[in-house]
Image 1 (cartoon, each protein chain N blue to C red):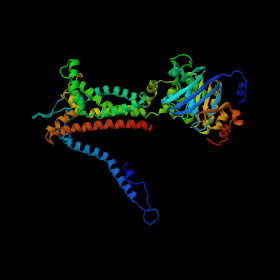
Image 2 (cartoon, each protein chain N blue to C red):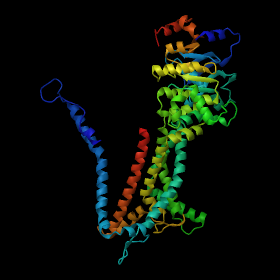
Image 3 (cartoon, chains in turn red, green):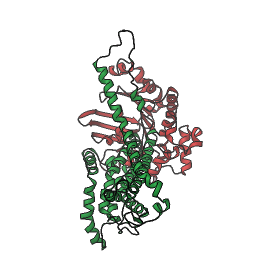
Image 4 (cartoon, rainbow over the protein chains, first blue to last red):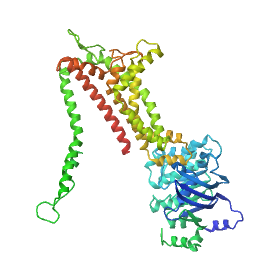
Length: 268
Length: 315
């Protein structure tokens, strides 16, 4: 399971999906991120761990700029996604969010039909041309739902409200609806915390399926999950990145004492 | 709903001189307050029933002895003070009320919906709070003031702009009533929009939807029941409004065929004529019959609105 990424690491020039430089972030007067430098490798699953309030969700939410909804967020530094700084003044927020899909902690399908949920984002971006799925709506719906292994379960009730699905199905749907606009990056903010172990396993398997095709950055509270389901791992503490390594290395031979203590459950 | 208040939840051991059966002062205060708020709570029911019984009692004599249903509802001749053969046809009055309320809704619905969308979805911080306070203030303006505006400002304006002899008409009253209903509808519509969970907005925005797309494609469909309820409450308000309508319609019994015709509303008829009638007389009872009609219609409209609004809260 981890042999392929290890081999990939040996290649000389790794490609980065996200390149973050000296990112500082304030909520009002409270500084939530300090000098964050992070390179997230393309096509991999990278997990972020750390105690509550360490800034991992804040970082994640600033990668598709959904943080700005709050209105009192201030940012310094840069986040380059596929080579372009998404905080440049001439960047269109809409395009950033098309490229960078986001899955939230609590499944949040829109209160419309399953089918319309899948097509929602596609309809938003189809006019802009370029880089969206070119199939018919029916093909898009089927392909997206097949990708998240949901098609067989819901194919007979596509017109039903998405909010009627189970939480696990809702979360899969929330992943599926990002795919028709062909994002390069999927951000997931504790995507399994509302799910039972079975649902968690199903979503983790799905992530593993999507690996390679998409770069996935996943925030998790569940260390076992980070260990199982990611190739690289980032440990954050008090708004700073403490350690960033291959998951297997971090969990076996962490280089920082804080990391070791956290992994062993001495705090957090 | 009454029972849960009447039967206290506290269980106190009875009989025996156990360690737990001491009733202190706080216990009695609690019981007294519970009884008091219970009375206040059920007073709403008492008042609604009381008013209905009163109105019905006063009007029922007319319904039983004098009313010709066909004549009452289907003729436009309202001559209650004709000494020889009084006529009680309310068709024209209903047409007056309906036309004014209808026009008022044409004015108020888009206006208040727009205002609510701005306040709930676009404005932020101070702007939003200021607007909310102002909307509430607007809702508190007495209707006679609105009537006055209709009489003194709108009337000459309509005469001047549209070159008509009289400016007290459906148009005048419709606009005045629309402006009156708008603040309440705005408040209710804004509540309905606020009731849409924020995670829907967040989800849509994270997918790259603009504010307007979020509003149009997600928030409005999710809030549609609440919005409809708000509109219905506005209709109920328009239907029952008296003073402004009395002042701005021209108060002429007439089935309008243009917005520049003067009309007379059901409510205004009662307000204007009740004082001149003989208590208990035929005319007096006829007015109360109109009152029953108004009561039934507004009650139905409000109840429907309420059920619709509650419907979404559950769903």
